Image (cartoon, rainbow, N blue to C red; front, side, top):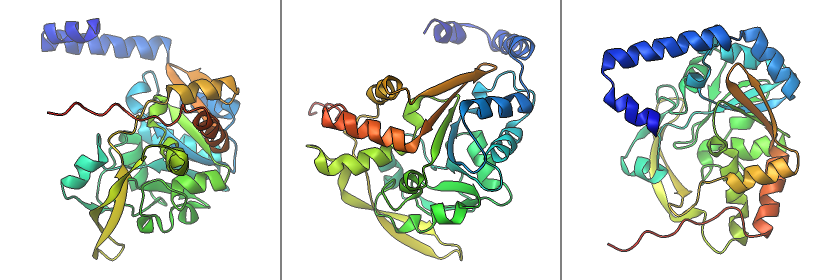
Length: 290
């Protein structure tokens, strides 16, 4: 809060100077190379053949002695030609319901990912395919890419069993958080969808939203999708604590970037155990009437 208030009070030229000094400090004392990143991933537990879903924020890679495309190449090298690399390429920030109400047209070839610079460059990269789901698309590269994203546009929910998120569990996949908090982990929504039948409140809206998307031929189509309820609590604090208690939270740093590796199966099992205790997922308090 102090840095935010100070930032607002400083003249633009001073802020630019301070940012440059901070970048210089990071490059000097927290520098790391693509080789350092590759080594850190290996020590963390990423191995050739993995099905790996990555969430990232390149602005946290301060001190990295290359660019975002180098991060992608390191990740591809880490899973190898026998593995598969996945990244959610969701085309909005904020509420999916608000996004749906804006009447967008999703085009996998042109609609930008709003999940960070690395994901946007990844979806454009050679050999990368993208699922056609209008709200929660996934880009994939590797030997199982087409299998993992196939038919996503036919799913009537964003992250259910017959989506790349559900298939991540089926293929004993792993999840990498690279400089991002746990609540960016889209697989958590798959777990919430799976648990909905045993909950006293809905995870998804009862009504389906008509969403327009273009197929591979450019033909405009409509999918009717139930979206996540505005009353669903997105706080994963309890889930993180349970994963740490089970020693399923693997973490290390490279430079100033925190890397966390999780197994989809362990995340799912932790979510089910918390659900049995009424701790996951949770419902937000309803807003007061106007």
